[in-house]
Image (tube, rainbow over the protein chains, first blue to last red):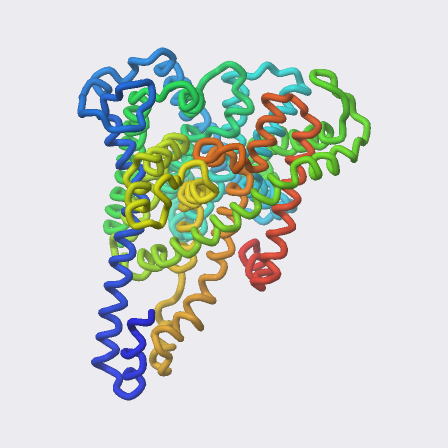
Length: 284
Length: 289
């Protein structure tokens, strides 16, 4: 900011040219800053990807030894890893599907209807998102202990659905708020009943929101460590596997799986963004 | 189906709500009840009996106040740094992103699709004693010849700052994106300098985003235990580490449950103080409505 002071001083006497100079400076300061910030965000990711090609000497994958393809040609070449990844993917798919359905219904109710108890419902959606994960995980642990429910796949799934619902509601609601209800009225005027209107008009229009919500839920689920850690029993998910490995040995296969999840997730998000852009242009 | 929707309009929202809210009541509200009950119980694993044992709270706090204060301190510093790092970035995307806004936003979120633990392990590599960062800092004498980054408070705070960054950037972006550019133009038409129009127009309008970002960053940061575990030593352990080990290793459930509630309470108090000081009472009321 100090470098710009002369420009600000002369700005008061003459307006046009110095303003442009000041804007030029400021624009580029910000551009450079944004570039550095993005670099900072991607630095650990670059390390993760690079070390997936490492050929570590010992049990830990912390120092660069040499380039190899072997981790990628044998991504599950470590005992227990493939089982953990399978559990993570199953939980992520099931929990995101269930949470997306439950959350979308809540979002529809909250945006479309005025009813007694909507404030309480909003609170019930909001509080889980502001509760520290460790508290949520611990409270579920006490529930399962008190109800004598053995911990495992089922309890992980229950927990993941529970923390995903709120995020789905918030994402779908954002899409519903900007919804043009005249389109539905037009469909009804043309003789469609409510069910047909919902399936042919409402659902396609809010589909990008639902899709984004389910992707978010999937990502949150596959990445969750803390809540899962408290409720997994003897079942191991991929993050739990990494946690266990961090203490004993870190095989480069972990980086391979991490990179693969990253590429798939970003690819899906990118496809969603591009698809929405195309739709936006088509409807504009 | 159409007839059902039509005839019983009043029942429709409840029919839509019930499955999801029931799930949240059974698996979020009820567990809180059991957590509270556990916090007021006595005994040794696996036999705990409920008995209004309020002393669990005072015992837990006096035994672990160092970790409590450390958690709030680390989370506070990390949140502040995250705000300073994120604001210009969110501003840049919102005002300079043009039609690539969504793409830039995706770039900001993308790194967080690498599993949390793997990201943190990557920071362990970056900050390690024979890593580039430590060597450069030693060469320019910011660190001593045997100075380290790993296993210090700085490493833990840096890890927390990085790991919760999207929770700061996204709400900031949303509020900055909604700022009406005509208001900024009006300010400069009225001879406000760029700095003044930012300080008097853009910044105040983005305060709801600042509030949400600080909240969404501080809360998970205060309860975190992964960064302290992987980047620090027991000297840097936070309250999350204590709760985790009391629950899963020591199995002293009443103490662990009491600590969980104190953590939630401390966060709530700080959030309320913060809301007061920022004058965002009306803002949050507006956001909730």
